[in-house]
Figure 1 (cartoon, rainbow, N blue to C red):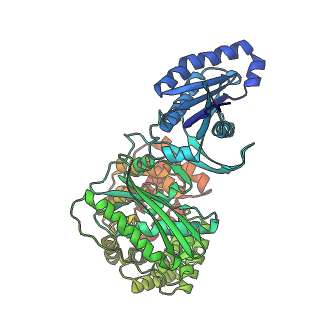
Figure 2 (cartoon, one colour):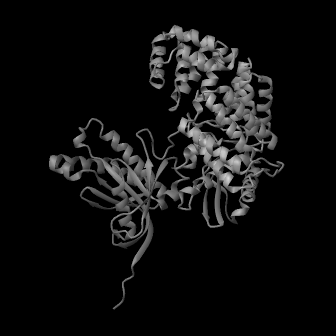
Figure 3 (tube, rainbow, N blue to C red):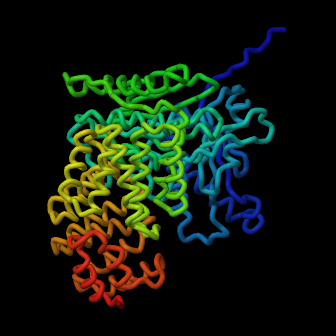
Length: 593
């Protein structure tokens, strides 16, 4: 007997079903069937044709489909879910038809018009994991579409599902009613304009080791590459504070590029096992989705710093043809001799950038101090230690500001002595000099830092501070604006906008001040002081109702605050802090002494 040939093929499979179908049928059988048929006829069938799909079969409330293109399948699913939101508008909630969708790429068996196999079964399990109105996809689907659709994805990790022996790695597609057909959640109008020189964002490297302790190692790799790239003055490099806000998010590079305003995106992964490390990295031109360069490195752990330099140099070499003939330089660093100190430093940064919360600041200080003790020659650890002491003063977390300033000065001076070419060290010393009213010296330190790293957003912010408190508010404005552009997703971006607003307050340009301070209070972590400044500005503009609303919001962040509270907090940096204009505006807004 001749054995029948078994047809198999690799395809993209989509499964959709109706949430709560049995309940809907029990409540209104005829109406439910009529609405479901209308959705299929008016929406699903034309969209299927538009995206070159095929309905394999209908199973009551379920639909099994296949697509020749995985991108088409994902875009179909997104448009389906968005259209269903519109079609359900005005329908009582208990009668709405809502789909959940799963998408997978798998090897299938074909029998006539039907398809079978594990690829189909996994798709059904993905669909079951999706939220009502949501879409879940497999890792294979994600890997195919992440650079081709401007959507965000949430990594849900590996899931054990019924009758599938191996865990399924699941991603959730983040969609909203305003997203359309794979369009970015950042519109073209909202996207930041590309700088006039090559621009790049380095995303946090994925930790592939399965060990949470290695997160810091992966973070350090990405940060050192950012630092290395920033030494090239012809590159525009987005700050760590902004790129690391994407950590743990599976976002498409086009979305990242639009939100950060860059052309190039670097992403990678780190796998550490014993005394060996594997690093993979790929550089993508986000304007086209093309891969410019990709490489895998296997090295002994003791070579890690040389490896970071090698990756940085290769990336620069990949971008260089875009510029023509540009002189190649080799990134020079002074890495700590003690890898444990480096790890402590990375952990300290993680806590430091946690919006300077009190507990996080205390832990960051402890970790930087430990790093300095383990490796006394580690300049940047001393610099960040100085920054934590300054933050204590700014946040009012110290009982003895003078003692804290002395500790900050000791750490900053030590950092500069160890490595005068480290921009973080120069900025740390400059912050101390601002508090000691040595503004011209502070300006010189900040300018030196920017000269060492033209993409150091904190350097521009602190130069703005030195100019502002030194009585040169007009000159401070472009510095704050440059800092914002270099780090548009900084966790403390409210501070950049707030100080830009303060510069305009000093110039008595209250319209521009109000616009900047509105940006500050839009930030989710904005403190009461940002709302107080904004209220004072509106007080000057005679918009008292709006000003009082902001004062009420400030009260929720600092109950019982008064003009005296604002004066003692904002007036600590001398006559150019704008405190008199702020107090006058707060009085006009109705705040009590």
